[in-house]
Image (cartoon, rainbow, N blue to C red):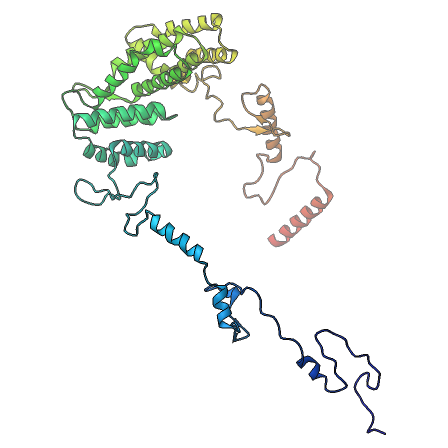
Length: 444
């Protein structure tokens, strides 16, 4: 029974024989004979191109080399036509290119040339010029003005090693003047630097020392004041910077004298007086603001000097300012600045002379309330002694402190005396009685 049993799926079923053009008509023999009688595969008309060093188009698949079955067919497919060979030969013969030609550079290319200094060393690090040195010094002082006292001597020593001729001295004067009037808010530090150089720069050619050359440079700008004060906005801006620098220079520049202490340059005093007249002659906002800044800077010193000489130049300037406030077509803010300047001058430029304590009053001493305490209201508003109600509220605070800390209290703080009218909290009163009993018991 088991001999005729076939375990293959579909065993014993009738099948239709396949009819395929590529398969021969076979009987019920072995199935492998059907596949062995297929027609051979046809070779492709063209072989794929062979590329060198291309991992994607490898000549080996699965470790076996892929070669054409017919070597003569591979050679035939990759052979170059004769027409192409002739065209390549003609192109080579007609070409003007040469393997011995020099290197080609684009039109915009500039070949690199190593710079060699005069002493024969490589020029990778060129020597700094005087202009670069001064600009570096001034930039450092502008960013760190607090280091002036500690670093100025080192800077002047370096400049002295550079400035050895009359030409370099004039260049130094021009550089410092230009930077002092061009850098914002540098006029004060620039004037201090000029004063230090005038005393420590030893070079003094026939044309003059540093201070004399600096004053000559300032005079050149001074002679153009009438044109600059009525120029365009940029010209006026430069002129205003020059005026403020001249004011700082008058305060900082000291002229040594063999007979007495150093004094200020008299020529700068005359120049400042004329410059203020020039500014007031064209009372536009920019000129008036510059005049206000100049008088706030130098007003007290100028008035003291003029008073010593018996001159009333400051009174004349103040009178001219009051006329400008009434007549000039300047802005309201500028008029307010001028009025505050007049008030500042009437208060002796904010200066307070030493006076006896008994003579000091809130009217003649602006620092009268300086040592008084400052309180703050519930909403955080400062409440000082200058307020009208300060004295009453301050006295009320002092009275409350006296009530909280009576004078008849014991210094050691162990015992306190209370008036009969004072009411004590019951718990505190009970604790106080226990404390007194305990103290009495310990005494016994």
